[in-house]
Length: 233
Image (cartoon, rainbow, N blue to C red; front, side, top):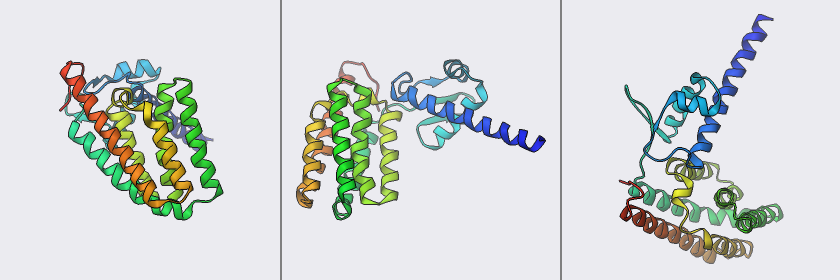
């Protein structure tokens, strides 16, 4: 009985850490926590309605992922927005995603076509309902669906991490306000080219889409800087 109780306590601790981790990620995504902000243990614990211990453990895991930083004797902080890092993320995304298209088209079957079309429809639905945060999620899902169909798991994991940096480290609604209007059109064209198995066209459209998003995003950040609504480095 004692061993079972210890095991249950261990499971409960893991569940609490996971709950704290998920809760902090949600705060980052919804900009309840903003770039370059100190993360108070007690404040986070109160907002998550839990003790400090799982919050600290969750922050350690987020630090390992590069989503927050720890300063000795000062605590945890979110990172400021670095324009250079944002540019590098988009450049790496383009390099990886375009390179996955040959395998995606090669392995595309009826299930893959259904998954792509479903991703497109969910993105359009979020646009119709003006669900901004859901649009971000579905935008991500479309790109990761292409990676998933390719079967290249390492590249898919890297893309997952890059999206985490964009959506969580820098704050989704800060970064993506500038381009969402055209995302559905671009996605539909990319999807159609993939289904038609037109590799050259799909690579061209995907490359242009990511470059366009990057350009608009950097311009938006520059606008926010000029109005002193955002501090970036």
